[in-house]
Image 1 (cartoon, one colour):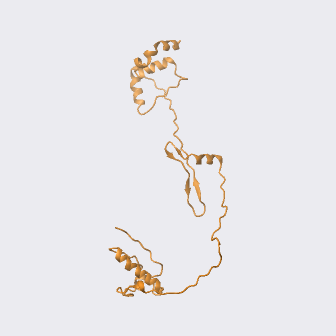
Image 2 (cartoon, one colour):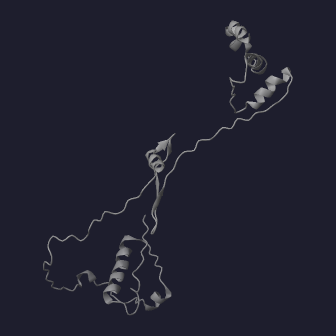
Length: 200
């Protein structure tokens, strides 16, 4: 199954079109009928008016109807290149952009530059990965010891617990482990003597 979309040459169906042009278009449609089951021709009203449906006899093979001409070809200039290579132009980039171009991938994310096509101003865009910045939120909440564990578990849903060693002393850490995490035997018992020493 195939689909052929063909835009005919402008003016090829007009009444004053060249005979060779008309013949080429007619042959094209004849060949397409041999390789396709259906043809859908999108033609303007002007083309339909000037289209000659009986221009050629389909029983005649027009492949043999060719004109022969004799041409003489002579050398004009030897070893002449048809194009020249020019230096082009340079783009001055800052050191920051140069370093960003070198980073082609980070954490599985492609970061290579993207070329922006333009007829007048061709350019490219560099990309860099900006990681999420975590801003810790400080809450001051007064609770009973019996409510501490349940409140802590509800606040830790989908989050991580960050302990600031500069502000939390051993007494506060012990309260967190015993009444908040309820992991006294697992975390405190093996280090009971060291904890008592650190308190004083």
